[in-house]
Amino acid sequence: MALSGCITHTRVIQLTGDIRVDGPMMITNGPPRDKVLWEYRTAAAAMCGGDYLYSKRLLDDALLAAGGVSTDHSAKLARSYFHPESAKTFIGEPYERVMAYYYRGILYWMDGEPDNARACFRSAAIQDADAENKEYAADYVLLDYLDGLASLKLGGDGSDAFKRAAAEARLAKPPAPDPKANVLFFLEFDPGPYKYASGQYRDELRFGVLSPPVQSAEIQVDAQNLDVAPYDDLFFQATTRGGRVMDHILGNKAVFKTSTDVAGTAAILGGVIAASQNNRTSQEVGLGLIAAGLISKIVSASTRPEADIRAWNNLPRYLSFTAMALTPGQHTARVEFRDAAGNVIPRFTKTVTLNIPPDGKDKVVFVSDQSLTPQTI
Image (cartoon, rainbow, N blue to C red):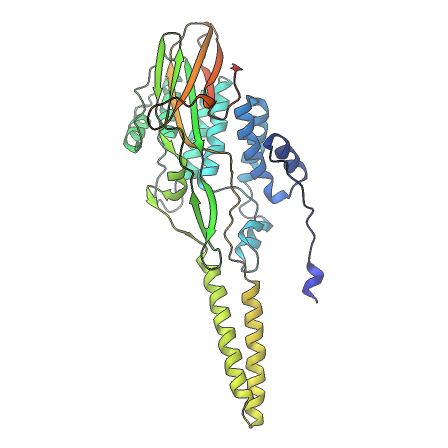
């Protein structure tokens, strides 16, 4: 009865299934612990819709919040035995935080700031690495490749970053950088990883992925045709650290729940046996054991080991990049996405009108298989 007085009621918000509607509504009216999650999701949708200014605002706020919540009250609750992981403020798994910095880096480069873009790609790499214990290093191909390319554009030497990118390549190796290339294509495709819980107490965080319909892309501009292969796989990144497969298990809470449950059962059984004796002392001890066992069972039932399966659910699976040199003026780019057999998947084809400036600055083009089409950049 005392505990029932602590129950709080959460207002249920009806979602429409349209991130363009649900995102802004949940950012404003949803639980504060989920604000960063909805900012992530809405920023990705804004990228696909060409609303880059809105995406920048969302990512700036999300990254600021994600950098300062590790010791907040909700995180302390989640670390306790009696609150689920989902009670903590969402900042995302490493691959999700990487993508927030990756998108912000693209947007900085769009604004003609390759130095800030490079800083974002380096920050993204830190999210993927174990900076404290040095057990594993970041292994995204594009983060290092783009670090090197930005350095090259800024008049520096990006050779070390290019070497790291080549060494990390598993799917395909990015091409040698062309200093004269003034049009930079950031491509992404296929649905990204999803999260689910497994185990007796749903305490094991697992990742799944749908069968990928898209395996590659081709960009056609004027007389140039560029094949684009995937360089990074977010499913691989979600399930590994430093290339090693990871088991995501909240074992401490699961063990505590099991041990308290078993101890409670043993105490109750022992108490029943003792209480059944004709000896008064044995009966009193038995009743004490039963009471202790019941308390232990209540504690076990209150333990919340469930894994946090909140996810940035509109991320892509594959990331890619290519660059080309185009003369100032207007050009039309056609982006075709292809399946494993090399066949074009017509519903994903995008058309982008490019206005190349005469000042020599880079034109940055973001294209997802979920992007709106046509677009003018």
